[in-house]
Length: 94
Image (cartoon, rainbow, N blue to C red; front, top):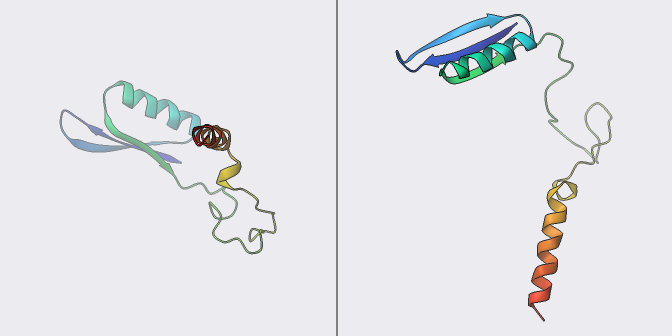
């Protein structure tokens, strides 16, 4: 089950709406936003979720479930832009 919460800007009252599927929840959330509702959000207590969300500890590069964890921010999309800036700064030094 999913809950969609929203506030009616005319009355300033908050409301909750229950739906059964993620598709329905997304459709209702979009609908409430199009109607001008504010603070529109949805939440779920997913009984089918496996494990805890996120990674809570990494020891020697391994997650608690034994999966190798090698994510690092410097290897993501921002790295190429950062390298361009470094090269531009090097040119300015000459």
